[in-house]
Image: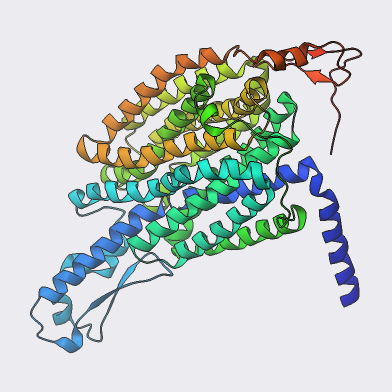
Length: 516
């Protein structure tokens, strides 16, 4: 039996390596990588505000206890922050009524455990906006700084090694999140995640663009890959809040670590990341791409569209704790409508946007994001957040599933068809939204309030939307248009258009070859 199992395992590994060039298998690997990255990104959203608040309360309780007269040292209490659950316990050998009376009410373990239900200190809760915002923004900031190096690197060594390096870094970050019990270590874990995310997202999107060369196919494949991102965003907050409330802080990160190991094993057998496979042609320099106004408009749509949800991530849970007195698990469930609708939007418009015009899809999406965000502060309970959050997620799905394929399309039409650098720019835009959103959003929410924060980002999105009109018919390089229009060319070509496709050459049919 042992030999038979070994043979089956060998055949599975052999099949995986033979299928390593299959586009569908590569798409699945990128899907799983984006899923894990965004689950780790969002699983902390409901955990960190409550955990840091409890941590600060425990510190204050300890300071108050140390300042009291030490009449009974044997019965003194000490605050203990548990790595394995979300409560802050009090330890001590004396549990008599006399000693209990010496402890201030705020030091009660029971009250601390329920502190996110009805916080006692509103001013302290508002101060958490900045700390939580900076911690959330650290990942995107580091990713923003790393992307300009990862894009050109993929052109030199290929996509396999960077995406595997991203897995390794992500695994270390997940373990750090699980066992960190201070703000500094949590900040370091979040920052380290930014490096791994940069490797995974830039290399993953570039790999898809290189194996799906047809514009319509590429849009569909990127839509599926963004479905992995959407699923991670969908599962992360409710998974994190439920596990945190009923099991403890460490549990969700341990589960994510095991999922990361599965993804790493799959990459190791299929992609064989020890191989260095540089691109066959030199790509357009990163600075040249950044000067392209059409690429900048597409990147701006990605940035400002995602900035709306990025601003909500650290500030909405705190606003809910302040105004709605919600349970811990509800802090993550509030994002569930946005996550579900994002998943729906990316799958629908991955294909539909090509037919209706990607520029139009992005324009409508930006307007809907703006109006949905403006409606968020009018909610009086968690049920009032369902419709606005659903609109935000669905509209961002429209923007992302339109703009990501356009980035590859613009490179094909106006530059050299090497995709690492352009998807580094797309990821920079995404990261700018998630770096500026939490950091600026936390400060604005603290100074002028959450409703005004939503008003500002809503108006910005609405006013940016008309710029998407410029992406309707972007001009291309003359030599590339000549190649596409050459009727003597024997290869099958498909003209690029954001609204439709047509074929050039003799005996052309609308079916394309399947390279699976």
